[in-house]
Amino acid sequence: MAPSASRFPLLAVDIGNTSTVLGLADEHLNLTHTWRLRTNRDLLPDDLALQLHSLLSLDGMTPPASAVLSSVAPPLGQNYRSALRQHFGVEALEVSAENLPEVRVELDTPAAVGADRLCNLYGAERYLKDHEYAVVVDFGTSTNFDIIGRGRRFIGGVLATGAQVSADALFSRAAKLPRIALEAPATAIGKNTIHALQSGLVFGYAEMVDGLLRRIRAELDAPAVAVATGGFAHTLEGICREIDAYDETLTLRGMVELWHSQQAKNTASRTL
Ligand SMILES: Nc1ncnc2c1ncn2[C@@H]1O[C@H](COP(=O)(O)OP(=O)(O)O)[C@@H](O)[C@H]1O
Ligand SMILES: CC(C)(COP(=O)(O)O)[C@@H](O)C(=O)NCCC(=O)O
Ligand SMILES: [K+]
Image 1 (cartoon, rainbow, N blue to C red):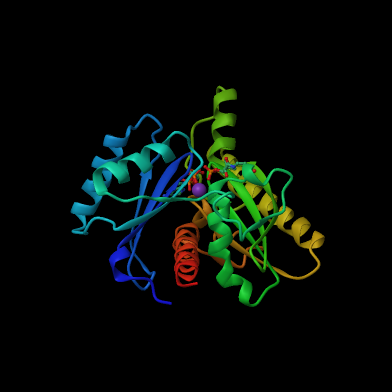
Image 2 (image 1 turned 45 degrees about the horizontal axis):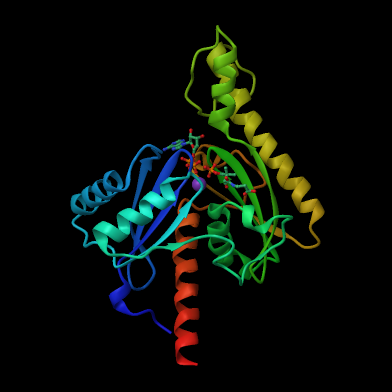
């Protein structure tokens, strides 16, 4: 059933530890606008409402009529919720394992799974048409590998130190090393400090990702498609051999799909 037009535009807010990514979707569930802001845990509901208002008016957009919210950076989830309620009159759907009984979270403590990883499960569904399993590699503050099975199974994963966090840790402990841009050098063998660091941080990181993907695939009983997303993904595009696709908006589109699946469920239960 098509969602009612009065629920759009739909706002999706993905609050990560480094960036807050926002998207607006139209009644066809297509993302028409996306924005990336620095996550700042000090912001209060009125600050967040001002930011959102500014973004919307910059791009000439009407305010959201509904919203879906994922946060791994408390208390920003609560603060966004209040901002949306008080200033936009919108009650946001909050992503959590408890709110999604149709998802099978096959972890020791299902409630502990990061909300962003549940969004990725929905974002991965389009890749599961041709594969039994999908591995979403989400390059954020931490690099998450989310192993997803058909039928909305969250099978498990890997949490690895993010590339920028690794670099920052090294710079803070080695007095003579300069801060460098995390970009791939031309060759693995560096002829100066900067290139040598870029080789270790970017190629070294890519090898870690490829190695983990090989191990994950070896533990699964059917082929898996690997899809990369998150802030650092495009730096590794063409470098990681085990990644099949790069999808910048996988998490946001997953949030839109997740919201839509809940709408469809509510509509079905009202017509019973
Ligand atoms: N525009 C960008 N270009 C290149 N790297 C980026 C960009 N934005 C973020 N990053 C890198 O991505 C990582 C953070 O990803 P992000 O998606 O912002 O994290 P989180 O999901 O934790 O908020 C860091 O390693 C950062 O250096
Ligand atoms: C692993 C994370 C910190 C990743 O956050 P991000 O790098 O996207 O900011 C987040 O998904 C989280 O806090 N997860 C809770 C633990 C878990 O998912 O098992
Ligand atoms: K994220």
